[in-house]
Amino acid sequence: MKFNVLTLFPDMVMDSLNHSIIGKAMEKGIIQVNSINFRDFSDSKHNSVDDYPYGGGAGMVIQAQPVLDAYEDLVKKEGTSRLIYLTPQGKTFNQAMAEEFAREDQLTFLCGHYEGIDERIIDSIVTDEVSIGDFVLTGGEMAVVLIIDAVARLIPGVLKNNTSSEHESFHDYLLEYPQYSRPEIYKGMSVPKVLLSGHHKNIEIWRREQSLLRTYKKRPDLLPFANLTESDKQFLKK
Ligand code: SAM
Image (cartoon, rainbow, N blue to C red; front, side, top):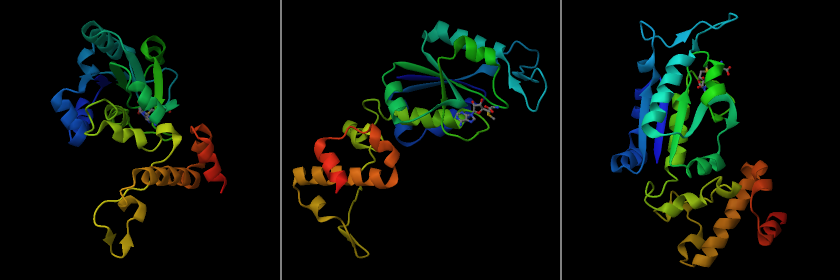
């Protein structure tokens, strides 16, 4: 899968992604991240990309020209794809969106900076507006890193065990069950006996119940969206 990122700070994106699991996936060519500095497309004398907002007000606004020219160049080279603008005004990113994005062959992200971008960019090329939460960052770079990380780990071959993302929190709107590793007893705290039993069916039941219980306690707002069986509902009634 290919991720294109239109940004003023390509190194911020690449340096953050170039580690651990995502770094290895890039090295193996399972995912490609193509970070493009749209300043390189500025037709102004000093390669400037921002100017004062019409109507006055604080800060600077990223102009349409460098972004639209960078995008046109990208389309010539890579073809078209969804163009996702990172903005606090967008739909809040979640696991369902990560799963939807992971089904695409290619995605393009646009990072704003300063006070934001000229609205005509949104009107002409943006297909999706996505936020990472109700707070304001200085730029879209950290947001795109977070989204690429969440999407990339769903691509087959990125995680060692492809099924590990299937039981994780938010998949099917349930939080993941508790996890334990060696030793069996640490500072007087024991691992639940069922996990040591080797009885796969009982482990599966325990994990499902823990998952339901945790979601009920920590994120009850998710439960109405979860795909609950009759026995799940019975368990939650107890
Ligand atoms: N003036 C804009 C507003 O009030 O909607 C905020 C601009 S913000 C300072 C600069 C850039 O950071 C935005 O263009 C966007 O790309 C990015 N950004 C800020 N907060 C974000 C968030 N919560 N999610 C995604 N991107 C964000």
